[in-house]
View 1 (cartoon, rainbow, N blue to C red):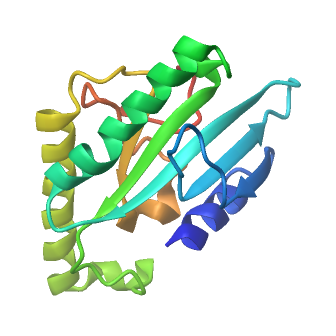
View 2 (view 1 turned 90 degrees about the horizontal axis):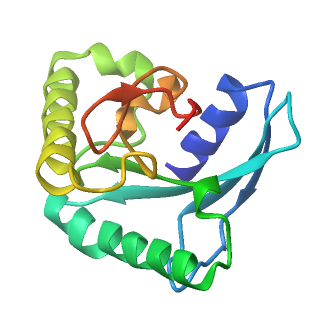
Length: 169
């Protein structure tokens, strides 16, 4: 799953320069992927903290991961160790029953379509019920089965809006 996400960034954003790290840690939080992005037009860099979550229930994503991210962001702000505005946390979710080895061509099969709709409902529940009070500029949420179109406006903000992942905050 990590490599599907990383490869999608490389292929869908050919004009950006990406660096990927799989061993980063910030105040005890270890994202699955730390992506450093360099814009083609400026010398600015910013970072995506990618968490890939496969859980039975979305409340576990919130309580086990997102709360820890909020604590990390508070530590960064308190200690002024990084520019907090240069970080966005991306949560890529699916349930434990979704076959992550399926390819997008298979997503049109009736039983797969039903499961995709189910996962989309779980993600919507995560955002609407657990994440609605999080800082809108800091978090983005996507279902894993949309990895091949992550450059489209499919990312949900905590307010429930669909945006591009590399859109201005």
